[in-house]
Length: 253
Image (cartoon, rainbow, N blue to C red; front, side):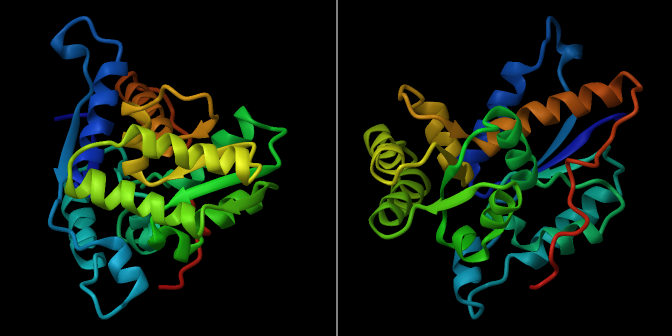
């Protein structure tokens, strides 16, 4: 297969399914051959990312992801994308293990935020406790010149319930809970917009988008970037990965 890309997902599977569903729905296709070539690695048995980040005695999710990167690199994809924000904890180590460009979802998302909301000041962030502890989105948002407002305390409890209890365990999206989280971030914490720093939150946005609150959805953005890149490679166009990868990501893990 020529000109394909690799999707490393399964963290969790419902969120990865959302990415694939949007990817196929947005691809301009009138026949089978118009769709994109890709390999989906739905590695559902990768250990929980947040559990390890918060407690290093828990199973480490880096070895299985590293094995995926090396295995897929040998096949020669044009690029790779990891469909899990929290897994970017090991981004630099994973990217260094391959010559194939690995898209940096948080970096791409905040670059898009700068373009869509240039006048935004207070940027809210909701994510897993692991992503919060890693500060990956905080660094991106601060470097972009915005003030970060964290969804901590009561909001974080609700976010954890939505991600783990409702979506991962119950395979359902509580739209009312999701909307209330956004309402608290915008109306009570005074955010100009909210960054959805977890792919389960992206799934919630797909299923319950009937709200008035402005959000930046990294998974939604990386879907569009995946289509753009894959189409460019298929058409033999030159691709610039400068704003899509991050070579200076801190190596601290």
